[in-house]
Image 1 (cartoon, rainbow, N blue to C red):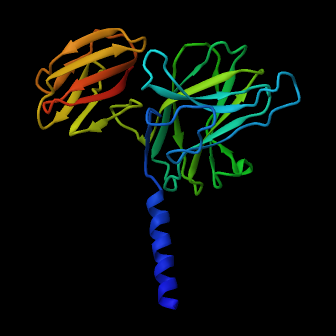
Image 2 (cartoon, rainbow, N blue to C red):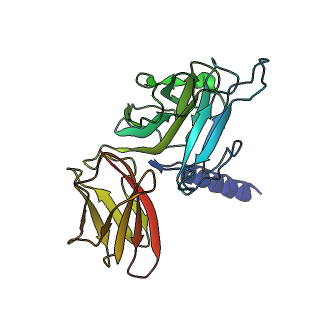
Amino acid sequence: MKLRLLLGTLLFTAMTAQAQVATLNENFDGFTAGNTTFPQSGWSAITASPTPAFPPVSPRMIVAQDNDNPTNKFVQSYAGNNGAEPSYLISPQIAAPAGDKTLSFQTTLVSPSPGPGTIQIGLVSNPADMSTFVAVGNPVTVGTIGTIQNISVPIPASSSQYIVFRFTPSATHVAIQIDNVMYNTASNLAVSDQIKSQELVKFAVNLDNTALQFITKKDPKNISIYSASGQKVSGGKLSGKSFDISTLQTGVYFIIIETAENSTVKSKFIKK
């Protein structure tokens, strides 16, 4: 019995260790859309309480999707009828930060928000207890509807193993959106969707933001690039292992790759 108990303890310890992740690279596209779909994929949420004010609309942590491209999803913290108290989005458990990684993400204010909001990054030791929240860096003001802000926050060494986004509205019905969350070591690539990998296709934006550099066993048959609004802005084949994006404006783009095996890989990247 003692041997069995010890084996069970060792198995539990191994499972706990495996549950920790060293890095994050989350675009939320694989999440289930909806108003009450957390927890999922290791992420969880704690929302502010509704107030007695009319109408009785509860704060929510929403997984929303692009109307023009439903495969593109993002997270929105919606204040409901509580325009003062914060809501929290909590990451999966990470390995204890050593101070060598940076958190980066994109954020914007969602229409028709009546006022700005802020995002404060922090660390917690207990994903269910926000009293353990320790702020990291300064709060980010999100104040312009539709303007995408690229944010980077160095994460210091800590024993706390959960990264938290604390959303604080300035008024009722404020909605703040985040997407393309990356927690990793600093890199010359410096993009939120740094590397996508599927069916042996990998790519990243080069240092000069002029090309996509591919790592593939076989060159794709065709590449198509679309703007955030769904308009095709570029297409063609690789030149060497590179695809030219020098004429594209800064922003988020979607890419469809037709592989040599006649399958389709869909992803997105950020040009800075």
